[in-house]
Amino acid sequence: MKIHSISVPTPFYIGPVNVYLIAEDPITIIDTGPKTREAGEALREGLRAHGFRVSDIRRIVLTHAHEDHCGLARSLRDEAKDAEVLVHEWETGHRHGRLEYQEHRALLVRAGVPDDEIESLRRMYEGVRQYADSFQDHEYGPLWDNGELEFTSGTLRIVHTPGHTPGSCSFIREADRTVIAGDCVLKRITPNPVLSPDPIDPSKRFPSLAEYLVSLARLRSFAPTMVYGGHGGTVNDYEELFNRYIRAIQERQSHVIRLIPKGGATAWEVAQQMFPGTNDVHRFLAVSEAVAHLDLAQIEGKLTYEISATKEIYRPL
Image (cartoon, rainbow, N blue to C red; front, side, top):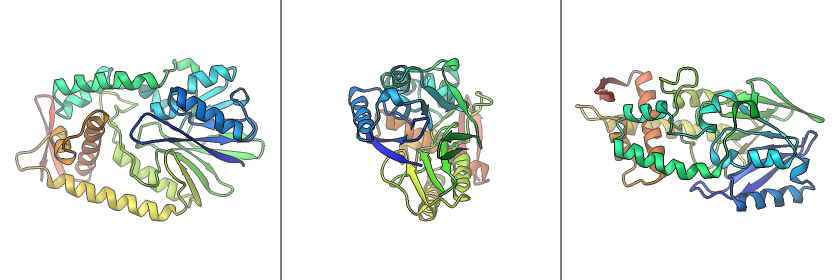
């Protein structure tokens, strides 16, 4: 199976995103890049370098629905004359934008984020939304765990790997144990467990970090020989990266627990201590990181929490 990586620029701090071209019938791209002129030009140039045009694309597969990965999906679908778009159904909340729904606001309130900060985050994400067009529910097909993407030369197995987002998916070519992992696996950094409503019960918070640890272990069970991430270089030693991730998560959690005073603290207060002076999208990512680690510590019996005036107060045991 011919898998080609195309580096596409983004306007975000993470830098370029990797789009993967599967040069087999049906011609497929995994992720698209953001909706910018520079990204569109880079993707077209990458396709031409391998002998293809946008009109040759028959299938657009999304590892997850963040703007840097899905932004061009609609325009590419239209230009390719209705190429099929596939994404996991748990990504619905992200495809239609973040932070404007009541359940997203409720999660931030529970985390102790002040009202003025919530409004600031909402305005900030209004700007981010320009980098992707949303899809209506009838405009995409679902990705199913353990399903297959069929090609003339073989298949890619769909593996639901939630954590970074609830509907994040990876794709495994079992013949040689090659994995395309989106933002589940990044060579240089640990992915952010983004604060999200639970897709089954939106009144609850999705346990992102706990689910992410399960996803890492599940990928490990396939003994990957090569992992193509959503950003940065290829991972050739997944076992080393897995252990590095686990150490980093354990160290971060220990640090978070030490930040909790006897009187307790909200996730927002912990985030301010973890990442002082953050701005823009980093404020939301800081809260996501704090909530994820506090939730995991509570699940593991290392912290307790109570709800006080709609806010969750975490306390040491």
